[in-house]
Image 1: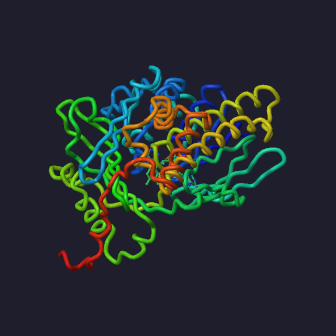
Image 2: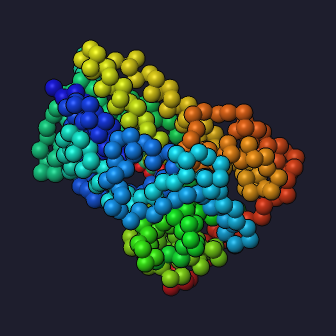
Length: 408
Ligand SMILES: Cc1cc2nc3c(=O)[nH]c(=O)nc-3n(C[C@H](O)[C@H](O)[C@H](O)COP(=O)(O)OP(=O)(O)OC[C@H]3O[C@@H](n4cnc5c(N)ncnc54)[C@H](O)[C@@H]3O)c2cc1C
């Protein structure tokens, strides 16, 4: 019997397996895909740097060309306004910088690190069934040849990401109301990036009815870059579109002068991908890894004390996680339903409130604090009374209104 089976070898699964492997526990990772494989989720919060150092992954990332991020930049889609947030201006040294990632090589390096830390990891193995035993679990999976296998374990970590294997099985998965958005995105090379230190920053480009991201993933010494570029729209807009996703994505990119200019010298490297999206502020990756590490540490502690793991052993990491998720969910909701840009980009902001918001952008947040509550109160007041000038943003989805064949 294994100490732990981990379902999924993405950032969460590999981090958990690294912690358990380093603790001398027998751990098996079952990953459905073969790495390297494409995955979205490239903008990383600075809090991840300390986490990577704590699991020994930081050194393994040093030879890569992953872009260095020191802040987040917010722009209006027609170039009328921009605002930069440098982490070093507000936060202590631990949160000044992080690496952005291209997930295909990053996830491969992180899984190799888990193996080097003592974990066994099988790729091309899709978990199909989990049976709860008393005590422990039996996990069934199918390999690429179609052979079915099983393994028993004292503990189990579901790191299957949006597939949410156990959450679906147990009916625990909840969608955040009011955030039914769709993202269209692709990888590009040779995007025109901002000059100097800003080149590695994530850029959020705001329209009235959409927002775009530009995330440099790798920057070579000569300046060649690969970047993730995407646009997020309401699901209803996507549902009304009759053409190909690529054409929809390109029309929306064209509709912003900022995005158009950045993509002018660029070449697309991947097909257009479409995914339901509710993740902003670049936190999904970090929160999934942090929670996986905390859960794995609790499992390792429980096993060394009494050779079994109970629900109570995982209560603390679960509490921490839901507290953080609660804060970010509030932000995501406010981003989509409140006059976010009017306040976020306004000149009249208290440095403390601004610092509280930058902490959220950096992943340095445990739960809500007074200044965040003030930020939310000001958003509410803006919506009700219009206390600040409105930040005008162009509409871009009009670019989809003529039939898709009209252009070809
Ligand atoms: C459009 C979009 C944009 C995003 N942008 C960002 C961003 O910029 N920054 C950020 O921090 N986050 C972002 N995210 C979120 C981010 O992608 C996830 O939070 C992150 O990938 C979570 O890591 P994970 O390891 O939990 O899951 P994943 O990275 O999804 O890994 C799960 C792994 O489990 C495997 N798997 C699934 N089912 C099974 C099974 N049955 N058996 C075996 N293996 C299985 C999968 O193949 C996969 O490799 C974005 C998400 C979306 C949808």
